[in-house]
Length: 321
Image (cartoon, rainbow, N blue to C red):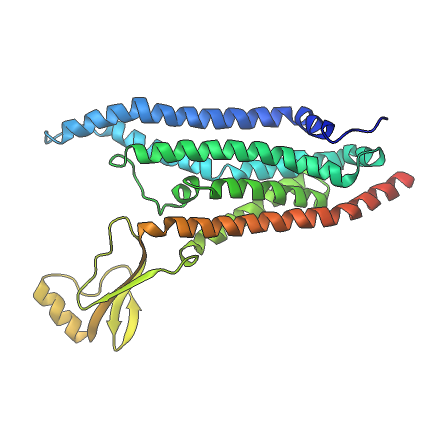
């Protein structure tokens, strides 16, 4: 068998995984098309309803609700598209070739394992980056087009990821984690499940600790505080006996001002505090999370290349036996 030059490896990857790449392209095109429809046809109907409601006591808000709910679903599709990348990378991109012996056959010919893995990662990474970037740009444009009709703010989990490069970072991380998992397990279906679980855990952990990725703002006042519009409320409560006591669902003192004043005196409340992220913290929070995800992707890639020689030796031993 003649030596395969490096430019031939990308062509081989594209040919072998053409169905998955077609599915990815169709997914990107469909989501962008849905966004265009929402921000032309559905939004126009919603704007008409909103204008009518401004001058009438009774009105129908169905189109506005449809626009809001469906835009939120688009955010979910964009922000969690990395799960599909993880499943494909673990099961098909690497796992199936290791399980069937196709990869071992390539390694015994003139294609080095390092070149093989480089092509396996580089070509999908380029296509995933281009597709994810297109989704982010389309979603950002759609999200900002009709702010009066959308439901939810920048703090919602899906919108937070879908509006920026974290979407691309999660997709690249899923590719790297899926590849590493496949090299570890050498079986397609187990690698698929573990890749999905690993990326799901990473997403949930970062979502739970997201508010701590950048220093928050704390305000203290003698009266109950109102945080800025569109702020992400992290914690609020009272100052009692010199200590902060977070609200357990609602303020301990409610009612008329005189009642609130007596209640505060009875509980020895000397002030109120609020901890929040203003809207200006979106990019610092988002970029820190993006950096963490890219660091995980880089680590998984390095581990995959370090594991590859071991898999190569195992394949040669099995062939000799």
